Image (cartoon, rainbow, N blue to C red; front, side, top):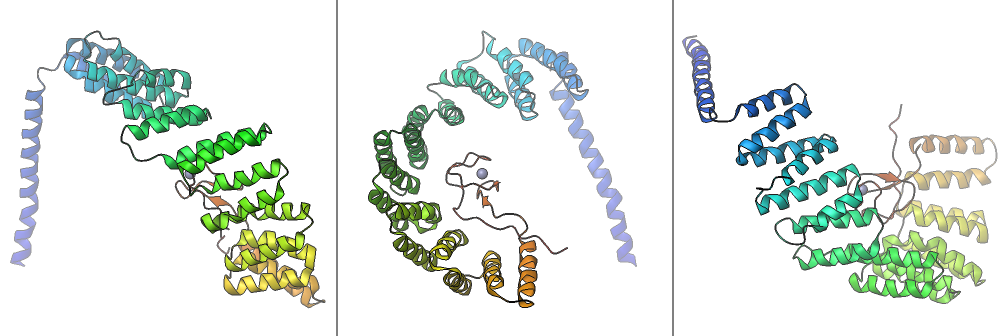
Length: 391
Ligand SMILES: [Zn+2]
């Protein structure tokens, strides 16, 4: 009991010590800040009362009286930008820039922040102009990175390429992966303009920037196909396997179409079965299953689905298997199989989606650049089925 009593005394003593310390801190703080201008406190007051415009005016007053408060402006500007009040952020940074006595380093900093304000506000032209005014100095690398973002948004691929190369030269980590995609974008545009030769030139540059770029290989096949050279197209698309086999689902349908046009469907189906067997994936199986059924009948497709289920069981495969069995079964077994299929399908209610590995954005189409976070190659070329929990 005695021991418990002493412990209880410790609490008020600690409280008293804490109170004394806080009083001391407050006193020190007040004496240190006694020579801050009145406008500073007025500004703080306006800020706390959500009167932002008046707060800015008060802080501008502080800045006039005391040049040491530049940091305060940066803090305010960033605060407004983060809150989405870009017009206020722009005003703060423009006010800083209008000061004739602003040191050069701070001028660069203010320009950089102003560029970020314009970018956030979606005023790309003005953002570009501002960042271009920072060709050297501490903020030049950041400015080039921001310029790259702007050019990517504007889909200005030649400027994206030159900016990415400039960033590499400034000693930043390699941008070869992005540069290859910029060339692929240009190749794709050339293909849309029915200019396969132009596309080939860009694809060569893409692969010299990043030999692992699968997209360039796929597009090289597209360029051949556009020229009517289906053999060449097939050869390119088959090369995807040696580059990275996970991307094979992206060429499966293209391959079948080319084999079909060459009147060699059987060869195409054989290739797809081989791919689907060696690299089990729902997306590959989907294409293979469809063409096997078309060419060799339901039993052959069924056998393929069964084989796949044995090597890589999953719910989509199970649905397909039950569907195939139901199609050939007699009543009442047919009804039972359909019931099972519906139950499994309910668990995979949503359609399978591609998922960005960087930001989690889900999409029905495959993207080389994520529409959510703008990252390149952040999607695995594999659709994932979201599992819904049982009700
Ligand atoms: Zn993303």
